[in-house]
Length: 191
Ligand SMILES: [Fe+2]
Ligand SMILES: [Fe+2]
Image (cartoon, rainbow, N blue to C red):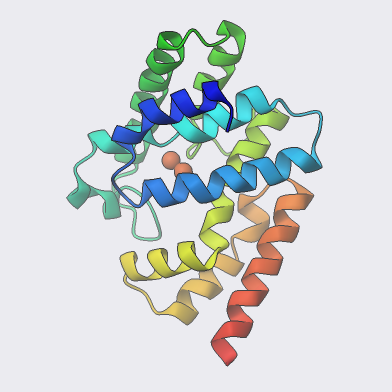
């Protein structure tokens, strides 16, 4: 991680110790790097900072509200929206504090403000960010965390996840990765 990204992460970190976001961001950051290698027209200087900062708004939402704010049992979508709007505001402040490029900062903030609730992607950068954000859910770590916190059986969760690949993901590379991870998880269940 270059010096600027490390500094952004250092400033984001106090807000990531909730909802397993430290592990989510670490895993999704690697997926973002992997997707960037597949799509050289995307701007790493937008995608990677957006990844580091996109979920810091969760820190403002009480943990006992998280399970009604996202996932299959979401009942309070306004809380999910709140983590986006507050996260966008906080990210803008962090980017300004480190003197980050203003044009890129504006794009990063726009990506964060809507990263979960906006169905359409704004740009290739946004597509990569959205895909990397979702891909961690297909890892063994993500699956293990999600099926337990959502209170469903592992098989039921894997089936739900498998049905989300086409609707959630934008890029062919991300769909390929998700299908592979999903198949591996299903195969592991058969052992
Ligand atoms: Fe989010
Ligand atoms: Fe996220």
